[in-house]
Image (cartoon, rainbow, N blue to C red):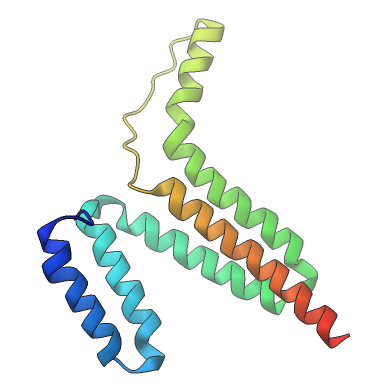
Length: 145
């Protein structure tokens, strides 16, 4: 589904817009999350589990960073490794293998790894959220002390 398609403009968008204002406040974020997952799955249902995995892992790490201040830097490094690892695998794995093959005259087989829609966008959005959690917690501590 593309933003300029008729199905988006005349069906999906009005349903989400009306649903957002009808639904109770405590369920609005869940509703928007589900609508976003439906929108993503419409374009590429094959990688919806990757998106859900990424969201859940980063949500849990964000909660842990907020709760356990002592392990915040370790969790941040772990989160960056996971996110950039996923991005690197899908975007750059075959490229690295081709460079190795060219440089060392090897014949390592490359894989047909299709690129998930928007992986760079959602990876860097998630990383910016995690960094904002880190920054927000430091501001709270400075205000309280």
